[in-house]
Amino acid sequence: MISDALRADLAPNGRLRAGVNHANTVIATKDAVTGELRGVSVDLVRELARRLEVPLELTGYDYSGGIVEALLDGTIDVGGIAGGAGSGREDALDFTGGYLQLEVTFIAGPSSMEVILEVDKRGGLFTEGRDAFNRFVVDFSNFQQVDWEGHLHNVVAQMSQRRGIF
Image (cartoon, rainbow, N blue to C red; front, side):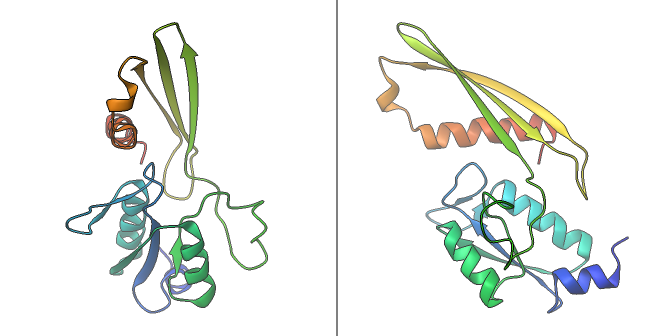
């Protein structure tokens, strides 16, 4: 059960105004046609709004600085930015612990490279910790024909769905 004090702190206007950085496609994307925001950050703030029992007002940003500006001027109540504690913004903003860590290992051979991904998610206020793994091979003969941004997004999405990471 969420306390009224926590609800008032996170959603002071009776709705959760959240900022999402869709330029970092590992955590969020913006559909070019519909403008719909999707991804880990979107899922997290939707769940937060659900648990707070308030409506969600979602705003997309194409760089993390936009989220910082919106947090500082009160346009949004919560937002996800990389770096968090240690970023030099601790005096102006409150930070939680990171919600995921993506580790990447590259094993190169003469004609290809294996890429191994491990996502570590620490336990926190709403969830327990979990790890997920995936791997794929980059063929040097055709790597320029692959949409790597889309491919990586799909790999991370598959990892999260299989293991309930996000």
